[in-house]
Image (cartoon, rainbow, N blue to C red):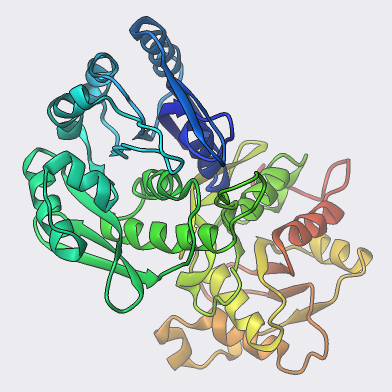
Length: 439
């Protein structure tokens, strides 16, 4: 299981800081680790105070985590003082994993998150070790002294931060003249990610973006990770929750439901017997998704290791091609069916599907036209063919394979938890059939 280490401040309202990072990492299928640098007193209405932890306490936390865990990414947020920055500098310098720096300057509720005397230390001791730095425009102007606003200011600030040592710079949240929000990526040349501008203020958006980026950049290019982080943060901000008295808080990511369902099925006894030779993916289509690259899936697989199933990879948009294509094809006829998982085909499993009362339909890959095979759209063709005569959405769609193609069952549901509940009905408390991989 991949692991993300968050280094930053503690927010008792859980809207930002290490707690927010941990929620994001969990929702993307990573195990969250954290090192706290400072305790803040804040909520949705006001910012109270900052209580930086001692260098010894921070160093002890780092030693405890890094002596026991191999992390896959590090996200750095609130550091506050020069002493704290020097305390983590050695860890960052020796890290062999992507480091995402979110150089937070001020809380949404107005509190200062960095001492002015520490700005140059941040630029000299922390920034040069960053794979990506993700300031918003106000933070970028503070760090660089650039006075220009908008895209002009973002481009100038990005170049300066790049020259100070960051491998990639993303200036987030610039408002353009077309009522859009633009993120500016600079890696020696400029790239732009554009999206819908949302009204109102919220807490947790910046932390959410940088934490998503830290998770996704482990298995994507920076440009692809930035595109996905923008889209997923937009979804979280589009459905903020008014849980406190004042400023709304960013909601959970759409991937959290999928991550929870994956966690429930990989822990099931005998789940390993449902994993096919090509391994398993579990997907969920957010509302409005129509293409595989808009569907959440595991960029990796659910993999059988002995008698266990483990998640190898991160949940991301476009994380699956084949199972995501199956969901898109199913939704062409039954739009409410947004989740699916592929499992091993066997006569025993077919019997269990029948005994569970599931509706099963088939398609024949041997009758697949050659041009479909050559175009790589076999799943889209097969699922569409299977459901074209169905009056109600089937629970499972099967095919018996073809030359060089493993037979397969794809189990569908409205939500990830719906699919997980169907999986539970297929797994008995005792041995499930013959295990083809044990001979």
